[in-house]
Length: 449
Picture 1 (cartoon, rainbow, N blue to C red):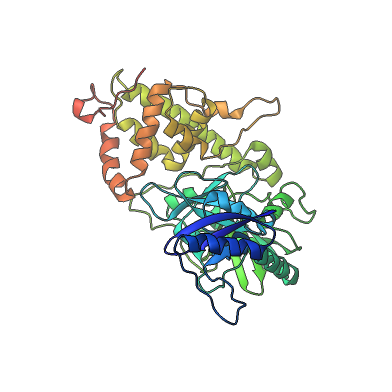
Picture 2: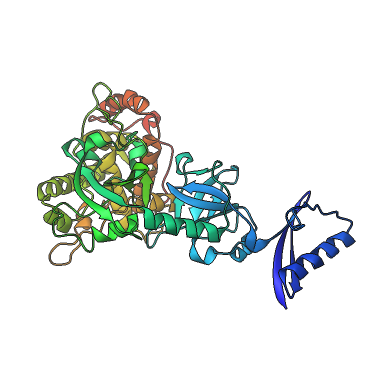
């Protein structure tokens, strides 16, 4: 006896499992079972009297879908029924999660049990090694309503045939001098700065042909572990762009901290990437986000040294600001503004993130601030003797005060830039030598020591 799983399409969707010798016997048993319950079935002549509203689970066709620029299939079948679909063992499976108050997918994960929106199947992986989830934005997903539904088996065969017939080329783009301040920044950081990666800030540095089966992940490995001899630039890194060309045109992919983000407007020439600076707004030395060893290999020692020295100065400025503006009970807002004005939001955030990362086991830092620091992916930077250079710009103020300092900075950076600029000059004026700070100038938050 064999087991046959069915989906029942009536006024509501149901499921059934039948033991039978053949599919026909299973359908007959199922029909008798439901007739006994008073349910009528529909037949159509010319199709061998196939029952239209009883579908074997293995033959179910799924909706066509797109996620992160890749073709996919989507189903909202119960999670425990998904593995019974024919052909799913040849595809990559991911679950979509919606929020508590949202009816749209907000994340893609390996497996979702709570707030599961549905499941997608792809012919190539969505995650890089070690990655278990990715945020979903509106531009990252959508239903392909014009494409006919397919079973997973049909989809796999179609993707294999398309791969065999497609000749694809790729180009690697890296930031030029005009985009130097964006180097090694991930998409989340760029969005916070209202920056969209654009070809105006990039130069094409390498071109090649994608062999059958090669993916973006394969290219990432190739240009980090097995770099071609004629590739003379720095290893493929966050902020680089891969452009893939085939018979459908060109698509641009931003190398993100985890995976790749499609850039639909990458080829739209723009003269300016940043919003016009507010009058009186300062510019700051960009943070160098890689190690000394990397800088040596890439010929970027000067950039590394300048950024490293600025990190140390920023660390010292934070310690000084806290010593002046924390009176043992209250932390004055000027402790944030003075350092923010001197070093800029990127540097100040980087030094605080490094500090929390280096002291990650200290329970006096909040979970929220630890997650914020981890998201920066600050690299461990060792010297020739194995010592960590990161300690040189790790702030040594009391962890509870530093946690409050970090929280205040994060709240400040969430405010509109114009609003911050309006108050910055006032705060800096108040930071000049003064008698005991007044209660009105003090923040009411008190760290727990």
